[in-house]
Length: 129
Image 1: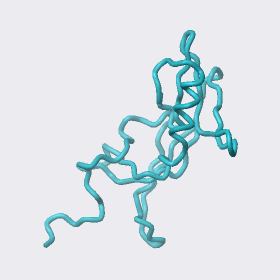
Image 2 (image 1 turned 180 degrees about the vertical axis):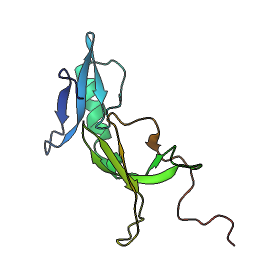
Image 3 (image 1 turned 90 degrees about the vertical axis):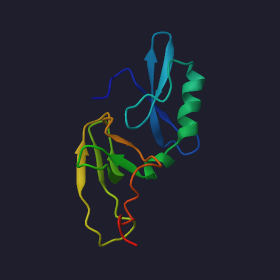
Image 4 (image 1 turned 90 degrees about the horizontal axis):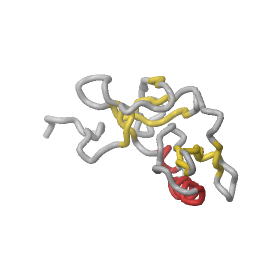
């Protein structure tokens, strides 16, 4: 549940919601739409700058979901709200590819993470020549 003390932050140009700024003593912390801290305690302007510079482009990135099998699963974010986070297996842009959706709690758990260079690609069949 979204704490009442969190203040929504919107991009200055189009007013799109890009995160929150929450109080931390006499300072402020920038919080992403996934509910994760983007900064430690900083002044208000630095919290705004952190959110503005992060923007929303990361929502389109490939993410990895750990714990669904022996290897992490390559996923895309489908829905992010303070009630839940929905991801689905990456379809690589194919409209007829089967996908599996996973509903996760909000804030997003650590098992949902950005893709690392060492993660399996998902498009490569291992062991084929």
